[in-house]
Length: 149
Image (cartoon, rainbow, N blue to C red):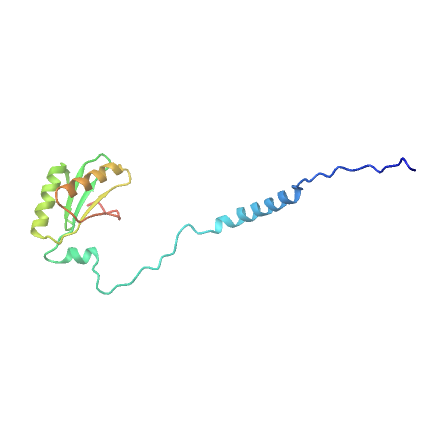
């Protein structure tokens, strides 16, 4: 027995990945089941005001008019003042002249630029830039689709 030596086993450190895979599959199933119930919006608590005027209130004033510059998908411009029918087929220079004329009559009139969904964004930016270069400082973007008259 003097020559007997037990076999030395070589120790290897390995990570057992089977439990890791099980945990990952359970988490994947949980996320797949709960993802349709997640809402896509963010709830916003908007502030209340008692003195602010809406756009329709401003347009209803006798000295203020609401000026809307519309751009269609082909880049054609239209102009509407105080919900009058839209005058279409105007050039950019004609729109600038008419907007400046309206603002000379009622300097507090809000000006809005809008386009339909197919209007290239570059056309909207071009009109905003040209109005700004013409000295019209307060120009907003139209956010709601207006009914065609």
